[in-house]
Length: 490
Image (cartoon, rainbow, N blue to C red):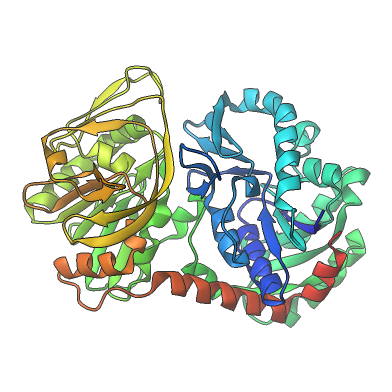
């Protein structure tokens, strides 16, 4: 087995994903063969990892592990994230195991399911380590959730079974970091406490020396060593976002030539589709929260993917966004619907088998003359395609249920593997597609923005991500004792 080290947080959203990505890139830059691993993830931002020999095309993993694989310079694998939970309701989620649909479970039922999932986690753990020098593991939530410890597969339950030492991550930006680190030490059982080899502080703003007394206090309470204090990583904003908890912080920036409005659907999925547009210097992407109208000065509205198309469509109407969207169209505005957003743009969405829930049909927004019927078989694959309106290459992936038909599909938005995809309105201003990642194609994005009157688009988005990863890695090398962290891996 490869040597391994694990980062666990004092809570959710403490920055573990970016830290693991940065440490992966730092290890790669040192010449190590490094791999990421996250036993269990909960996110509707998924990526597709190819599965050798799988005729269906591929399997789903968390978008974070896809990014971390890029940081390692390797192809993503379903074994990097063997258990993925995709929330569909407030109390239930779709369960993906080693890339494939395993079932659906309410939160309480899932706790009982975890025992059998540990076998899959350990199987994937063995596969990820093959041929690697180092595996960097990301926990989920916090090990301090001791009420869930008996069936845990994401934090100390995994660390103790796989004998992986743990570095605890505290987030100083949210306040109370001394109490959160010391409190974690206090309530962990001794078996788990022994796994922690030290801690680091993340998201520090200002003079780091001001926290010297804080480090001494934590050492007094815990005896743990500090591996360093990481400043606020500005480059992290240029990396794909994984978790919807960050959406509330994606506020509008300064006004730019083109405003893109994105309704924050309750079960929004794969909203990192917008990241390449956000990276464009003349584009302002505004995520619109429930209760707020779609801005009247937006030139483009993008309806993103959804894990619950009918549920989000009903909420779309409750928010009055349907009226805002019609007004936007009357002003000559453009609309793009991606995956679930594409389905919403049609006349009707039907779910005769109740796959998404008890509501089996809903009237669509009516901007495309198409209908969607949900079907049990799920399409999961990476694709190469070609934009029909712009005759330019596209690359991306599909993760969706449902089949969409109707007159407007005779004007496809793309051709994927020789098959027409999506639909375009008669005036060309409403585009629907099942393909995620289309804005990541630099040539297409540049021409698309030109069609909206924006000149000079088409930055090299993938190169920007690579540069951001290198910058994060350089910051971690400067502010963390990476030598000590890597040396403690076992």
